[in-house]
Length: 359
Ligand code: 13P
Ligand code: SF4
Image: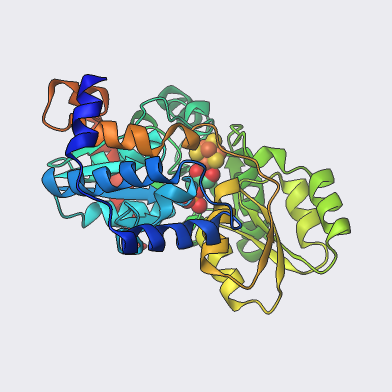
């Protein structure tokens, strides 16, 4: 407590221009709602910006982070880069600075650590998990390989290091299709997302006749976009195009594409689809704060976003991001440090590097 008061009293004065830039961005992203405690928010932001310089750290932030963590430094915020899981992995590879603060979930921070063994990667809350990543273990993959000898295993990046280490190649939602299509084999194993696997299988089978064997884990956010939910949203908003993530149940995806308006794809596919579409209204079948990203990017479009929040992503906030930065170089650092012991790191790096060759 005393330390907190001391730090706040030592903070540099807030710049009016920075505060204005931040509020403008925040309001665009959050449908013109001003944050309740704007002064407190700005104090946290200012402190994070100062500490990033002092601790030689860069801050990577996923599109599912709350709006205040998606605003870039040059817009008055704290992020050096905001992206999807592939974008964040690529950024982690070329990261400058000795330390990476990862505002996303643990499997993403772990990926950054696997690719950057010489850097410290810190996550503001170790409890930021993922129902897909915890839905499969290394032993499960070993079992699949015994059951289907010689069939290549493609793992979604939403897996932990020990699981990645057993797989042939990693993919993200952005490159999964391209990677699966690149294999000459007639059969492929895709883990861990059942719905994403089934959605990919549909496309791959039509195009190449290849069979995809899928695991049974589910994203607890995207599985909530059922066929009925999507149908009702389409009925109430007949002009809207429908944007759904690969992780949405296959039945709901079929429903969303039934009027020929919209796409199933990755987070980045969804973002770029809007930029090319003439439509003004969109139904979003994905995580709530991707709606904030879209509103921030496309000011003249309307996004209908049933707000399903990822409880793991929402564990990260400005306060624990500041706490992680403050801990760098102190005895508290261990609490935030993402470690991948050898030989798992080297074994997991191989399928990850194979994926990066595609990107
Ligand atoms: P992206 O690969 O689209 O960033 O998605 C990650 C994720 O966790 C989706 O739920
Ligand atoms: Fe995992 Fe789903 Fe959250 Fe993405 S949205 S991190 S897949 S639980």
